[in-house]
Image 1 (cartoon, helix red, strand yellow):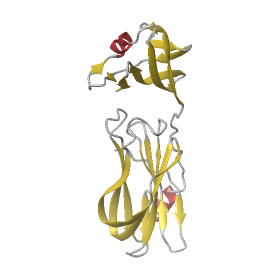
Image 2 (cartoon, one colour; image 1 turned 90 degrees about the horizontal axis):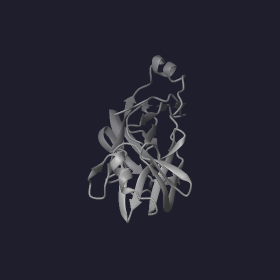
Image 3 (cartoon, one colour; image 1 turned 90 degrees about the vertical axis):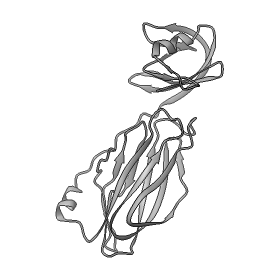
Image 4 (cartoon, helix red, strand yellow; image 1 turned 135 degrees about the vertical axis):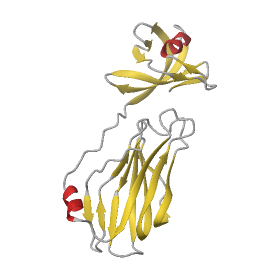
Length: 233
């Protein structure tokens, strides 16, 4: 689990302190929940959690049965939630209303889609307190940290293969070079090395490729050959 405090503090008129943001970025996508900590003056007060997921790959994707959910409530009760909304192809947003029953915690979880090769889950634990934050907490909340940027450049190309270069670890369609790296998973769960993957791609045959732009090149993440889907592991 990866959590980073992006220190943003909001004080409401009711004396509720919202402190920080909790972030998880174990896989390709990023989960961010605001706030990371909540301080309420008494039990029974309802507070709102804002949940954002930043996707590396545009939605909908082949593994689009992903979920945002909560787990392991301790001294809190989730009393309402909004429908998950896609703000754009790379951003999902959801809100939870939580009643604070005492000092407690709540896990907010993003579950990757079934068989997604880019991760299994992102998880953060939100903390709830009855009382007021210490001066140290408020002092630390004055320094802000930037959220990491995700590469969201992606394209899908279908065409005839013009070149396959094993030494350079790439193939070419319509004049665009697509790099093939790392391990690949076949349609039946079998594993391929990048070299074995390239050996399946033949000059003159039509293939479909989904790629992301990283480190100055287009990197293949999904290749369809004769209707069979191969996904980067």
